[in-house]
Length: 205
Image 1 (cartoon, rainbow, N blue to C red):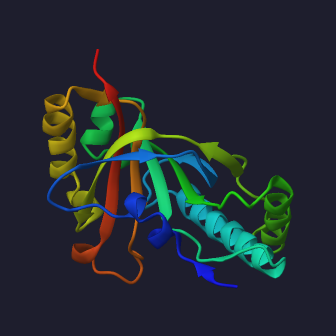
Image 2: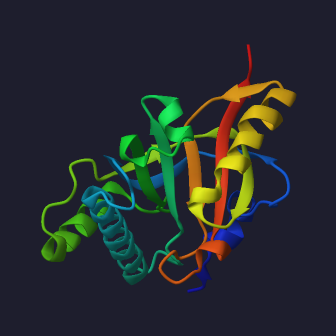
């Protein structure tokens, strides 16, 4: 059984130039998700969400492989980010942020498999976050760019995307700010972190 690397088979979703925004048409996909709020650097709920996402995703991976259905590498961590007041997001007031962290699960993963993976994870992690779920997600037309560097240095790139690129193309927001983490922050220097910044868009009225 060949092992699938979704970063290669879906390369157009997991790659982008760092000097310009490119358009992508993101298909409907399936994700394991957890919602939360607060500063990701300090909020206990954030660490718990990440722990549960990886535990469940790896349990799914091993179960699917053991069943002889598919062998795949667990895809990168992704996050949707927003704030009730958009100014709080732009100003990096992280204690007021809201987020949905998620990891893609291939379509072959069904609900019974997900529920079994959750039960397996409960044996070592206890009760899961209330928002832990398997869910379909569609973004459609989007713009994305690769950011290289610290997460806290994303603001100029986002400002260019929001204030220059989108207006110049007659586009406006059609979804939440989306980040795809291509680097392991535990093992990568902040200056070398690679993150896809994605913004779903639609024609401005």
